[in-house]
Amino acid sequence: MSGTFTKSMARNIFYGGTVFFVLLFLALSFDTMKELPKRDNRANLTESVINGKKLWEVNNCIGCHSLLGEGAYFAPELGNVYPRRGPEFIKAWIQAMPTGAPGRRQMPNFGFTDQELDDLVAFLKYSSEINTANWPPNIEG
Amino acid sequence: MQYKSQAVAKPYFIAAIALFTGQILFGLIMGLQYVVGDFLFPEIPFNVARMVHTNLLIVWLLFGFMGAAYFMIPEETETELYSPKLAIAMFWIFLVAGALTIVGYLTVPYATLAKMTGNDILATMGREFLEQPLVTKIGIVVVALAFLFNLSMTMLKGRKTSIGLVLLLGLWGLAIFFLFSFYNPHNLVLDKFFWWWVVHLWVEGVWELILGALLAFVLIKVTGVDREVIEKWLYVIITLALVSGIIGTGHHYFWIGTPEYWQWWGSIFSALEPIPFFAMTVFAFNMVNRRRRDHPNKAATLWALGTGVMAFLGAGVWGFLHTLAPVNYYTHGTQITAAHGHMAFYGAYAMVVLCIISYAMPILRGRAANSAKAQVMEMWSFWLMTVSMVFITLFLTAAGIVQVWLQRFSDTPIAFMAAQDQISLFYWMREVAGVFFLIGLLVYIASFFVKGETKAAA
Image (tube, rainbow over all chains, first blue to last red; front, side, top):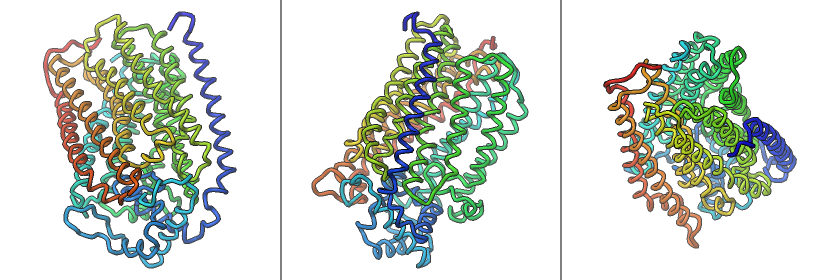
């Protein structure tokens, strides 16, 4: 860098550029907030779904699974598990854990009540109905 | 040591290295669970090991950043720290809170921990990287505010350099964006949208200011190049980082229910994100080539150069690899992401903290640099850890490519677990590379105990 480009010029570009892009980011975020009601399936945020989300969180499901592709990559994607497996399979599967099969990855048994299982399924159904721009590429997640 | 109060950095650095060791041990546990699924089950299920692994990473890097700031700011401001006592008090609070949190993860089921710690009052737990109980989160905020108060007061009474300002700006940003971890709406899309305001705006935003400041500080010290030149570079690098990184947040908004224009914004701007890291590499090599003195601490110089290169590879190249929306459509949430995450965190943040520790620790121990013998050992650990991380990343990338092929790209996609079985060979190789990483870390720790002739600090 030559002598004509000084530190104070670099500093001014830094502050100016940062402010500009922060404002642009805020504008895009603001627009996103306006667009989201069309895409995020908020109409179906029932009590059961809300409780299901809480169960999802307090049992740290994201520590093994991914949800809409975010989380851990140790266990299957669950954003589309509802259409992939259906409600009854999901509930039976959760209850059957752990399999205890030697050498296989194990999921703990969380001792959910029937109501809690229904809430979790409701949350997974709600998640699967979010408009994710056609992701994942296929039903296997 | 030029200023007595810099000494408070020492316990921070020691804690950082200790927690780093814990992180690696849990990483090895998880790596093994990938192939021997029932290893340590039910004592340490995978999700618990992962939470410990990632949370220890965050906490040891924070210890490293704080130690770095306490070491750097007195020298930059040319004045003693506002309150060394406050710094030491915060050290113990942070360490005890961190340790209790980890003990909580390991001894109590997570749902019970949530109940015990007031998650019903304000539900913030159970989201990736933000798993900490509410009390811990509040503790982090308190410690961060006390820390920032201490540093800001120091800066107010002393010299205000660009490095000092950029460092403080980065640290204030870190604290401010962490506040979004308290916002957890029921709406999953909103939850995810603002979750990234912590995670992305940390690691691809304000943390890069901290990274730049630490690197610039060490480069001034070890090369003796004029401060004006180095600080100009620093401003250029962080401008590039924020210009690309802020809108680059959009690369997380492709498939989570957000509008599809983010595919354009996110792809284009995050494709620019390698540029600041490339600039950082050029910067580091350039400054070392133009050095005006031969600093006796060769190891610190090696870490500084290594940070540039590995941050560029891990954050820049491996980030770019899967950041374009049409590619990310297939790679999102696969081992490709894991590969990138490992090398980016190691290359950018772990290495820069090890770099400042390498520079500062000998001085804190009363010498300009460690003995030649100790430095050779430290450099061995540099190569062992760095090469191991390259291999961890390559094996995970291979695993990711095969996973994407089998599960996503093929005409006859197979189920997740069936695909995992197919790639277990790569997981085994990753685990072996992980063992070498641990060996490197043990060599690193051992290098602190190697004696030999040293010169007293200037």
